[in-house]
Figure 1 (tube, helix red, strand yellow):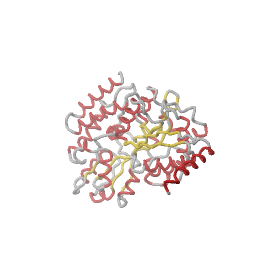
Figure 2 (cartoon, rainbow, N blue to C red; figure 1 turned 180 degrees about the vertical axis):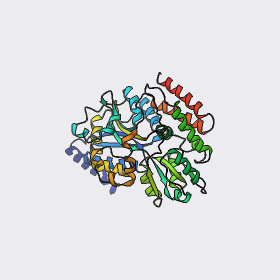
Figure 3 (cartoon, rainbow, N blue to C red; figure 1 turned 45 degrees about the vertical axis):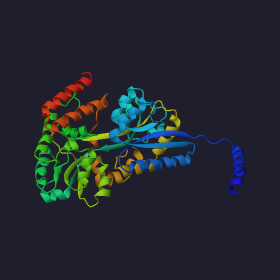
Figure 4 (spheres, one colour; figure 1 turned 90 degrees about the vertical axis):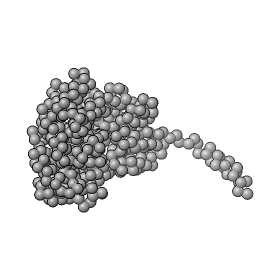
Length: 408
């Protein structure tokens, strides 16, 4: 009897569908999301679900990709004609994408009201040849975090300059099962971990005439200092085996006295090491004050067939509620004015400690072939850390390679 009723039911449903008219067409927007933490994917899925509830004709397809493989994944997808419609990218990649015609200028999509929601400092890196090639999606400045319990046990004082850091490291390294200074030597931002010292020693990535600054006396002195710390056992052994996340994990385990990092580590510490007594401090000084200012960009792809729908989602995702939740959850500095006005960003001692460096923040240069230049720097640093070349030899060779890349 059940089988006998199915055809009649099917006919009834078809009749109802005919009366209701054609089904609403669904447009899919493909969104490649860079993974900042375990919270990133669930957050953007939540945003997408809320957007789809208001816009049932648009589906947001979220794909989360680790930062270490993101550029290669996008490059492969672009070459294969399967690029997403929008993606989070490192702002340092934007110039290459713009010059190749991959990035879509967003000036025509930005209303004056929407544009005014952004903090100009963080919008500026996405402006290329007078065109806005993307929107700031995440921002941070860098600082030093110290484990105050280890400092107290060692009888050391949190450092204000590099000589004090060296003296504190000697004391902390004498504690059992403890490393004084976390030194990154593998994967993404290994070069950035060196820039912290490079800038505060008085050097720069590029000289005033656009040549590489890696062979400057300041750069060689900074690299020599890192190698001295390594050789004397004041860092964890074999830094070239340690990625950014690996060094973070050592600090969260309570076995590191000092680490250079960004605000994203704060919510991780609060969740995974809630009893740790830590403090956010500026980078040690020598010849200059410096911090690394970093933005990531939300980019619209030029060959997208659903730009209007993608932009509608972008505007939704930049609502104050979502931006506040994202910045708080990931530990970022705000890129929009309304979120920046929250009391949290001026009263919270941890976030305020990072934000304090913004007046003297330095950004990686927006130049062509940046990833190739960064990789050259990383290889030179790894040679130094492994003892395969002296700081002077490795950095001089790297500077020559970079100048060739830049056509200098």
